[in-house]
Figure 1: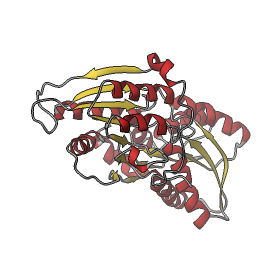
Figure 2: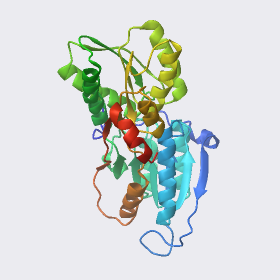
Figure 3: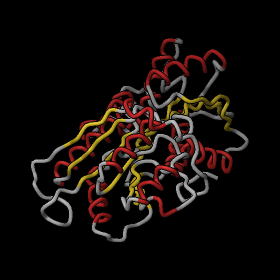
Figure 4: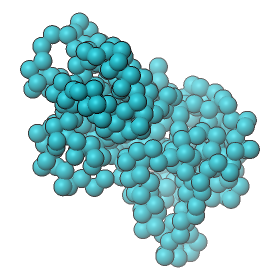
Length: 337
């Protein structure tokens, strides 16, 4: 069973990574501060490998990391993996070669990291995971995870759907379409798992996922897959989208099919980006489960502690909320991402 605390899977598929280094986008961030790190003189150098820029959430996450590294006075070496694991592995190897102080990354997928993480450990470079988890055969290959509980986000989505259905006056069977995140990615696996846990426990007789497919966390993917869903299952009652961007794409497909999103098809999404709240304020999304991308300040604090040899918790969770449609207009002006 996949979760953030199981470390059972050996590394796979990394042999070709070295030849694809040029595919990743890497830049070096600099700070106006001449200090940083425990020594007070030499800057702490952080190598950070990001998944990509596939969504509004990810862009906000990247901005938060870059701004927080600058504020902390760290030398940030940043790499965009463009949603490819081989690019990310290549970037991590580059960080190792450059002898950075700490490596942090948000993994594209759950498995296949053991080999490169063992290389970092051999050079005594600590690794911090952000946002997403990995499965590894050795717990010591990374120090901590800073991020959300995706399984609980799935549970929260199912629980808030109960409120959405009650508010809509829906009775009887519920046919659900699920737009999954990137195949093999922790949020996709765990959000689906948490949602199904509640569904099986409390709604075994009335809820049914009639169709489920990845939309790769993108608006284009959400639109394309939802259009196909409506062709094969025109009587869908509910859409559960693993992020707002796929949900927004799906709204376009629903409207193109002559249906009203938020009414004919009730929609629950995860993330809480500003565009999601705009759609919710327009009545097109019924509820959003928040996943906070502003991890930068928390990450920099953890990086410093790790560099200083301090003990940190194995999983440092972020604080998040849930929102119904009638809260959208009030909350929208205060959204920071």
